[in-house]
Image (tube, rainbow, N blue to C red; front, side):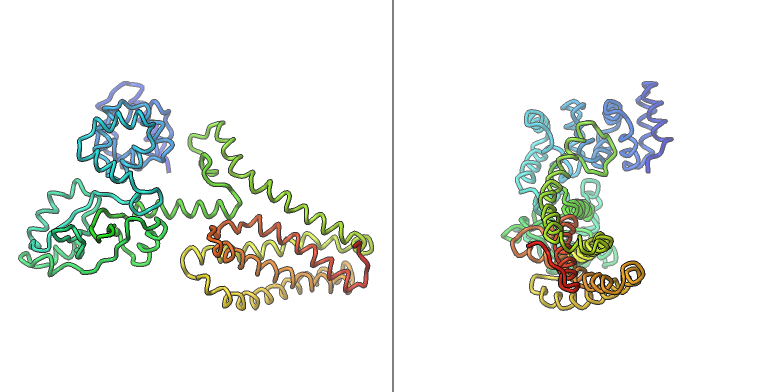
Length: 458
């Protein structure tokens, strides 16, 4: 939550042109609180605040900003100042930032960095986006197995300011192969002269540098660890991934899944729910996110109209059937969307796999039939008073079959898409609702035509 008092004080010191007071005031703030407040300032003023802070403080604040605001501010900083800030950032954060810069600016800033930082950025930036390599940081601590607990603590005490985490420290051999890990608690509790190799835990959980970032997140969640080491094909330790980076991945993947579930295209502009820094041009990108699927579904829904036209004689003969049409097809779409949401999540979290489809199918049939019967009985209470027993029977039978059809469709579409190596989240609610409309109309009027002994237009 943004603090109006912080924003007011920042504006006061900026207007007064008092950099010392501004620096002293911001030093007392948590970087996350200051980052939230910068979001409310103009880009020019936000850049001025970062120019005023000490480089290490600017680095902490810049790392808390979202990518768009980060880039708007960075473009107003001088190359020298930006290089100072980047030097003080954690390695994974500075790689993300440097890759967002225009090519010419990127090269200018890289030339101002020390050789070690420059080579580290180039090495980490070479990994494919979405892999463990692109997510990892090189700011981790290592120990040799022959050190004593006292020596290990002395070493960590010196290195701690430059490392992202020292709660876990990784034990490597002469070839940098990972042979174990030791927690800070283990070292503190161990007798001072006890060797690290006697305290460490062997065969730690690892991920490969080319593993997908979503698999990394699942691994960390499964084993409930704060950081996971990243190894190459020779099992050499080349980086670690910390929980805060995985949290960002989980949030990103969840947003993508929800966008797909809502038939929203990826890769365009800002988040639909992001109100910070909203610009008129964002309307165009949000339009592009939403319109493709909806246009496609317009043409899919033509089949709904064709179904109604096909049963025109049935509708003319018993006009009261139309009263229940929205209720029936809406119920089928709701049941399908509910089933699809549960199945997409189960597939995404690894709770179910392709081989489980048949077992889940039989379970879904039983559940959907029970739900359909309950809903059929509920709608019968309305129908019996409004349209009589014959039409009520049609509505009740249709409800059971439509809910069953919608549920099975919602459960099966994610499996079908997974089978063809497509993202199961694209079994979106609007797509299922549209398909449920088409089949619901055909089922409803088909049962009505059969049960009431009517003729339809062939």
